[in-house]
Length: 128
Ligand SMILES: [Zn+2]
Ligand SMILES: [Zn+2]
Image (tube, rainbow, N blue to C red; front, side, top):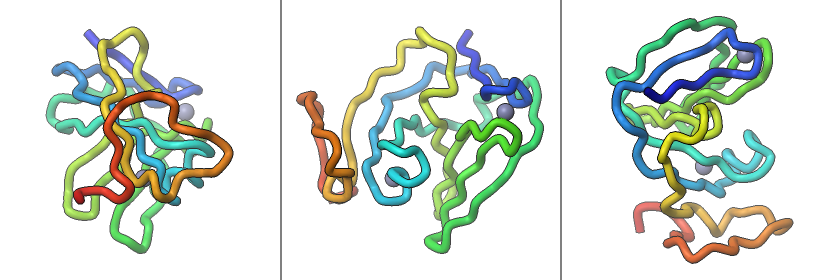
C-alpha cells in the first residue's frame, strides 16, 4: 500500500492503485510554485483514500487551474486541471513506491539555472 502525507501530518492518504508515470513540468507556474520543476502524477481521485485532511488552502490561477497545498506546513499536495482531473505531487508519497519520472514538459520555460541531464522524452510546449 502506498501512503503519503504533508510535512506537518495534517494531511495523510493512501493510494488504492499504483501511481502512474511522473511528469516533470518546467512551466512558469510550476517553476514559481516549486522553486524548481514540478514532479507530479495524474491520478484518479476515487482511488485515493484520505486518512486525514486539514489546513487545506487553494490557489486558483487565472488560467483555470487550481493548486492545493497545506496552509500549515506549505507542502504542495495536488493540482487540479482547468478541464477536470487531478495531478498529485510525486514528492508527497512515501518512497519507495515504484513511480518513475517518464517525461519533461514545457521545457521552453525551464529555469536557466539547471540542465536536463537525462534522456527522457521532452516537449518544449505540451500536447504538441
Ligand atoms: Zn501540513
Ligand atoms: Zn507546470
